[in-house]
Image (tube, rainbow, N blue to C red; front, side):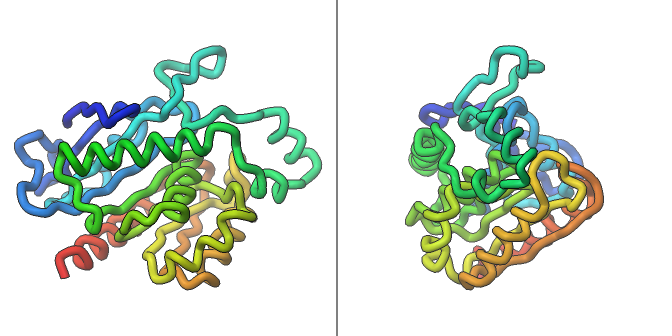
Length: 251
């Protein structure tokens, strides 16, 4: 595990080991690895998703990068190193929940989204210049708010991607997102969500899945029982998705 400074973002790099044991820096592949960049959710510490590398099982030839959110959370919501990609208007969310008007949330552009997208773009450029990232060997994704940012970046950036991973997330800025989806036609997308999710509504995850599929992205949706998380069934299917991306990169 290595700590990196990627422009405005701190990040953790973890190579996928050839065994189930924790990886070390010496195990970073020297020749054209697959890069998987995953963004954590609102309020989580920058280390929140790091355990996925080992939980997914042996993935030699894969390098995982976990950037920390742009904003330290602070205040009463910070339970120890929590970060966010942009602030959340909890009053607006509570109002939408009471009214059942999640469409308004899906159409809204959160203040700070553009800043977060620019920070991610700069981080990927530093990863390319200083650490060997190859643009055509990148899978980008995230959990919850991190998934929103990953999807927003994928739809707006010309950066080549091998895949997009959306874990328990939902659409935002949907009026702008929808016409941009055609440009990513054929892009493999892995999406997971639970109907029992009490944080982000399943119906909006389904709506995003439908729009991506209708736009021609190579989309797979994993529905699971449970709450707002990443259970074993998702990790098993995600591992298969990453292996398919690795094979595509090697082909």
